[in-house]
Image 1 (cartoon, rainbow, N blue to C red):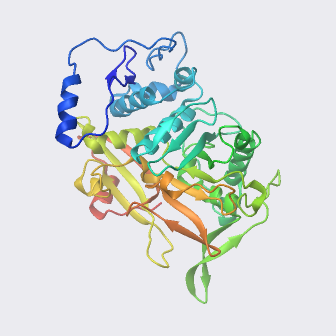
Image 2: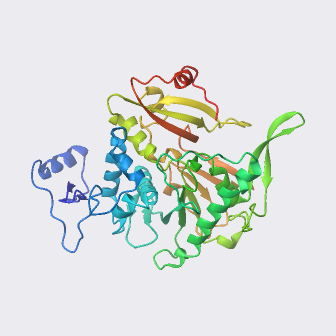
Image 3: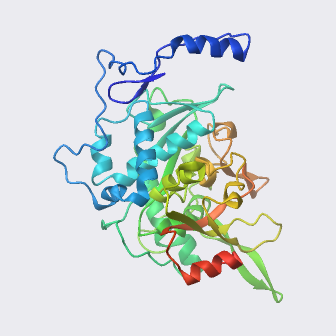
Length: 410
């Protein structure tokens, strides 16, 4: 593959059936053309607009932050993902630069996650957004969507929102209602009836931006809406235990029914894919943990790991430098993977279930004999986190204390 004049990768030669790796490398060498001009754009193919060219548009404040030195790795990464999209919408660059930055960011992160897991990702139709296939012959369709606020807000430097303090509000309150509205609007478009989707697994992939930093705490609301039941900590016989909390309807108005996956009413939806890490910080961390750290800056991640011990009621706190060996050793790749926070919530009544092999490195939630079961690829799953970028010279007493104790309170 080589770059086209618009920087998009294009295939220049393709062979298969080699007897050995050495034979393949020998053939490759014949096609290396270092220093030659970039490849021309194929006939009847539109030139892909540069992500950094505004063409008279006023960039959003959040897009402008990509010009900050501390976000150089993220800016580079987002541009590469944009150039790697098979067939992005013609308005992709303009949307990313202005009012739909997070929608396009989510599509880029999904592409990275799918490709990382060994999937063939194509965009042969205008919708759904992605067709995914694996080497086993499985295939499915994925439509990306974001949960947005009813009243728009400026994402740049917005003060973090506070999670509901009452468990029932957290599980079945405002966040659950926003997820309900977003998912139901997408389901009303009946993507499953499109000729190319009929008979295939179909999933909605949702990321949350309904309130500043809401992705830190809104996951419970998504689970509450999808299954109509969650677990909360309660005192039973003098001991703290996890008890099931169920609901038939979400709190507040409108009165949405809880349990999108509770019966066969939405069997056309195979699964909901979710991540609580659709952020510029995620772009930064992947690049930095992979060796792209900018000199003079530290990237710190603070949060809680999911505790897989039987009977565990709380997450495991952590505070780690993203460039540290301890952080990189959390994952077998030796750097933070794109799929680290990716979760797949399966519909037990799906007409065409989504094969686990179409997201082999995600965390899967599914019904097993009437019980919600979790299957995770990575040893460590992160319930929530926040990322800070600091100068090496900065001394932050409370952060230094956390690093010494590797402990943090939410």
